[in-house]
Image (cartoon, rainbow, N blue to C red):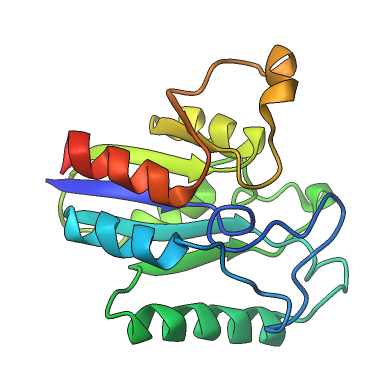
Length: 183
């Protein structure tokens, strides 16, 4: 039986570029302090880790798919330097208008991420910084963990569609919770 953590990227692993902005280069890809340590802890806790992220900036011509792959390699290299890894990175490069099955809040990216798993999923969490991530988690049947290190803020709570299962300030705090309660 597998334990799985799905991670959004921007605002969870790297600094959120701001509403309407995109990480368009490796130089703009700035890790949130503690993010790699958190990933390492989650892996040590026996979880498979999948990054699942909408990256519509490609469809909008803000950056190329080649640049997106360079950013992925940079993330993987930084993880390798710290002797850890993620199991896969899955992105939707479509725009909202494409109405694809992989764009969150649909679950196509999550389905793609786990498609190679031989074990049945026993437990899954989705850690994200937006309510689109939380809705995606609910649609998939994963526990919701909202981080306040990116897009969403507590001051918006009255507008939330539902209360996430867990709320933390950042990925490191969320990883400590996972290790203490689910490892």
